[in-house]
Image 1 (cartoon, rainbow, N blue to C red):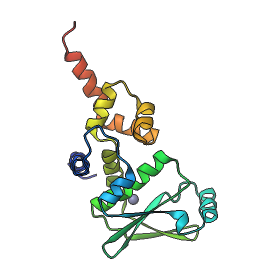
Image 2: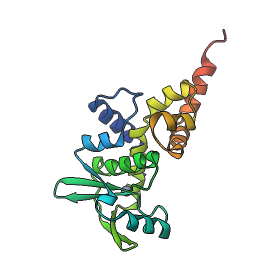
Image 3: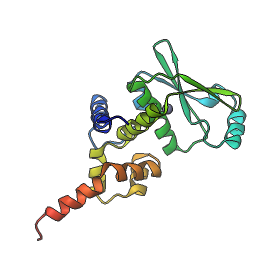
Image 4: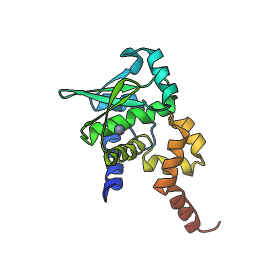
Length: 188
Ligand SMILES: [Zn+2]
């Protein structure tokens, strides 16, 4: 990821959440995020059969989670109905992040007879990072950790997947910040 991107993503997420009228510690719904950027969201089984999706999932687990189609200036996010709610939140937010970052879907990959558009690997990483910032911004994590919530509790409270909560706790350094704040407090 290019230098400065992580801090930028954190700021972008804060701005977007504020524009949506969310306070720093409010949970966010990926569908609302999509609506905010003007994207339409569809379940993949509205476009193809559930059976086909299940066969594909057996063939190559996780091959299809979500993707975005651009029709002129219109974005349509299609997501798999087979994933957990937490996972779906991440997948849709990832697609929203691509839209916010104005990434162009260029590579077409075919999996199980279905074609998907993907971005280059750098852009995929950026979208993952921004999606994490949107769902669990640093400020939210700090406040949650201060209340004693761990990754499991954060996942439950904010409707995200546990790996996402653990990843954000680890990479934002909020635990270290919290320990430092506690250590500098004078003993009673
Ligand atoms: Zn992507």
